[in-house]
Image 1 (tube, rainbow, N blue to C red):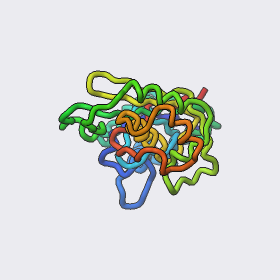
Image 2 (cartoon, one colour; image 1 turned 135 degrees about the vertical axis):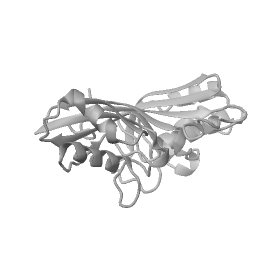
Image 3 (tube, rainbow, N blue to C red; image 1 turned 180 degrees about the horizontal axis):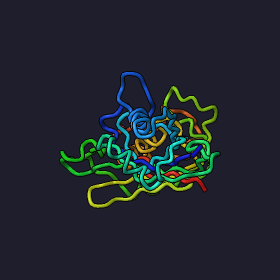
Image 4 (cartoon, helix red, strand yellow; image 1 turned 90 degrees about the horizontal axis):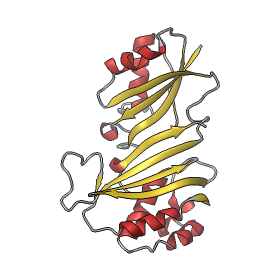
Length: 245
């Protein structure tokens, strides 16, 4: 049996997230249906992680097992022929049978995009979070660095998180600005439910002068969700890359 690894891009605005759910449009279900159509097999598609409703991906990774002998280079074309245009398979690879998209994952990179222009955007309103108030980007850059390292991120997780531990390692936390776009990018060994959107919301409060950069350490140590910023909307969030080594 072959183990096929897919790299997937999608626009999440019309979907109720990645996970398969009855009577709700979801990305996992859409791809599984098309795999069945081209292979004749029902498969279970395992993703590196479940993105929420409205969240996008540039480099989501998922894998499935199949007895199909379709050449590996033909799989992206075959799947893209029948998938919605808001989902594209960018790459297919045959991998070791022990590979699992979630369990084998070493690092993930997420990006949150804030449109900081005065009037927002019509064309990209579902792809960015529009916030017209002036932000101190230099303060946001300083604050981001306090997230790096291994910490208990309990203050930055939403209620309903099923994870047993809230300890995670952030390897890199950057804030950059290009014209009116502010990019918050985090690379870590894993993320709690809504963690990236809450960190982004906290950095937004720093940009507004409501939280000082050096206060981030105290917020982390408090483990108190009330001390962190609000959860920013899903449309600004992208799963950028998943690393396995």
